[in-house]
Length: 370
Length: 221
Image 1: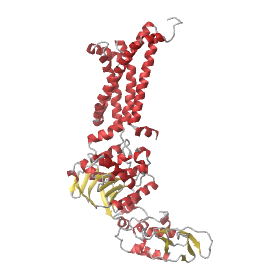
Image 2 (image 1 turned 180 degrees about the vertical axis):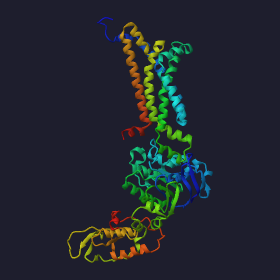
Image 3 (image 1 turned 90 degrees about the vertical axis):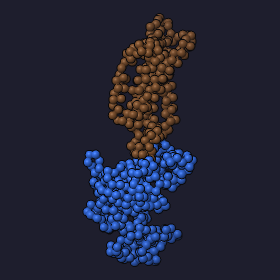
Image 4 (image 1 turned 60 degrees about the horizontal axis):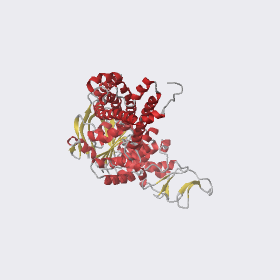
């Protein structure tokens, strides 16, 4: 647990970067600091590992004031990932990853073995270990950055806009990778971003900061989307809050019709029972029409709605984790579920918080309905 | 010199091999000692200038003034102190010239460390000294080596001027040949000085490749 207690950072020229910030970063979860530039999110992050010291207030790391800990010692116990990777250009990838173990005095063999293990863990080819950073793509460098931060197995990870400098496709895959890693490792992560979508996708808790370093709201993403504290937060969250909130409602409660037929249409399957399209009823060899699928076990109501909107029948096809046909959700069933979603209290369970968007679906498809 | 006189008289070279070798060796010593001394002095000066920014401009300013002094004048001023035709009289001014090139090179090299690299070193728990030795200095090496190449080649060529005060290594042959209107020693001197410069530069390029394999390909990317 990291606790900010009335933390203020004031610079010599009178600028206030962070103003009386009090909040708690829970252990083993991702807390995102999000806000426009100048909101003090990076300053707040850097006060945790004493890259910056606060003017007032204190920061506790598991009940110890960080100012009582000698900075290098403190920092070796906190992983750190930044936007431009910060990799050492003169060191091979394996040695970059082993940096903190070396600093902690591990022997070279053990440190390198650990580095190799981490490269694999973050999804990098171990053959890259002997290369230099400039020989890697931006996305690969960021993965190395994450591996390096994890090398000494620190309980806390600070990430300062780590995925901002890569293209959207790579960014999405890095985000997925981080969620996967976090599910395994359960680190206490503080993640800074200016991208609210990234905050909502990654955060268990999201702290929205406004210019001048004020905390505007801190809540889990579903609550944030449903009940923004004020106009600033609502404005920052942007459009389509209603649709986006559906990402946090699991699709597992939807009632499936197990037949392949709906009025006017039927689901066509291949020999492995995987859906290949919709076909007009009674038109045995007719053309296949587009379709969308979702997996009730992992996906959200948003994914199900998206799958329905993609199909001419207006129905979503449910599949099992192997991609085989599991049933159909009709528009009526979806309507009921959407009605419940807007009416019922927010589901505090975070099980579906990171539900995937519709398989192969266009994340913007939902906006067409709005 | 008459028209039948050849441009190079090989027999002269043959008869003077021991003399040529001796002057060549003297030349190498007088050229390279200043570079080594310069490097030894430039490192702490450059580190201090990079650490305390206020020192940088005055240091480089003084270095540039020193660099602008005519070498012959400096030699003459030093003669009463260090003696005529002494190695030291040549080595001292050349050391200053080397410094004028190397101090800015060390500072620029340290400044070439990207800010995000420095920040992440701090964030991972490097103390100031360890960061300097393990991160900043290695990353500065390509820029320092580039400065070292300039300093070395110019030092090799400047030694010749020492001939005017009686200690110029291969430079002696320029004066000797000019006074006698006899080209062979002049050509021997020029060729050997050039060979020395090219060899020294080649050694430094090789060192650069071996020491900083990470920088070679970065330039092409």
